[in-house]
Length: 84
Image (cartoon, rainbow, N blue to C red; front, side):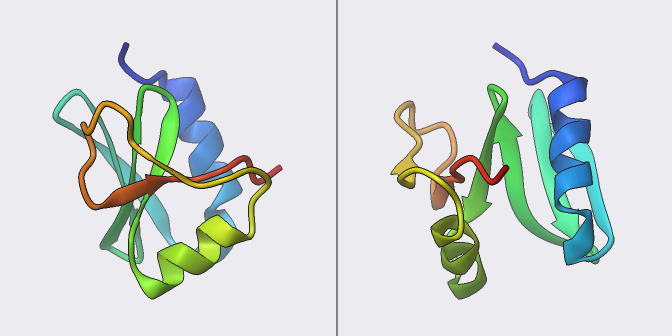
């Protein structure tokens, strides 16, 4: 199932305090950039954050446990828990 533009826009708005957040369609889903640096993607209406020190801190702030992508569509990234 492809991600909805409505969900992508919602995620972008929620992350707007982090910097200049942009997104673009990639491989049928969406890649996210902060100040022109790739850091996350949305796949099947789920946000996946790149595994870096900053990414780990971001994931640990949310409600719920981080998890690997069960379908292994997104390697080297972890699912971000609900942040609202």
